[in-house]
Length: 305
Image (cartoon, rainbow, N blue to C red; front, side):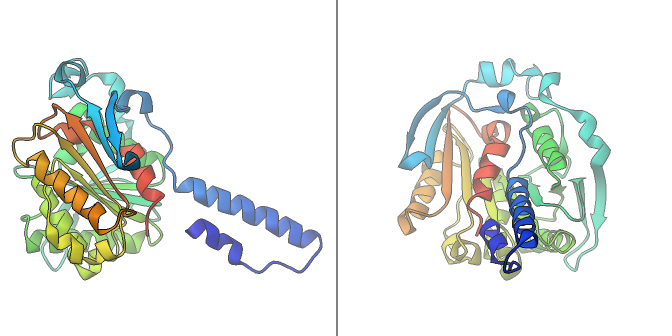
């Protein structure tokens, strides 16, 4: 870990200067370590409901989900506008709608937070029929996109919600170029890619590319799909953390297949950093609404290669 590397510096042999330098170095290292843990933002409102069961030392968890409570009671207008206490729209002050020219085509994207010198970068890749606007909507999906925006802005990070041409090689090339651009602007940032629904096809393609596969520090699959090619990817070889959130009644991507893929990862290595949260009775969009961004990202930050 980078924290341990702080203590590799040579100190003066003795005396007060050595003591002062040691103290300053320790303070620097503590500050650096703390910078890699996201500070809370409305944690009480976004905490998971009751845990119904857990196994594999917490790697697999079943969480209680109820539509009447988690949609109807949470939203002012069900699925369209969450109650005001779940959001803070002041984050729009650091939100921009940008365009990045790349060799694979122009990439329009919404950026929230620090576009240079960020400590952490999170991308959200939408599914079929979506756009960059979905991942920046403050009021849908229970306010969960507003939360990730505020978490990034409040922790010196950057949140990106891009458009892309397709879910194939061209789309992957565009997102890889976007990642490369912002990685150069923030060379010390840890980079995490969250993929909703069909966007997962891009998650797996990015993991397999030489450029993005070597830059990504974690993948979040939210109501998404599986891909056996991951096992031959550079990201898998680097042991990047993988999170799965899935509704038990997902009609698009059957949970049994995603659970089987998750278990196949553990089958390759029981110590591989992966987690699965099953939202009992949840459907296709449930993980996007319910996933605990802060808890998941803090776990990933503790496991990055």
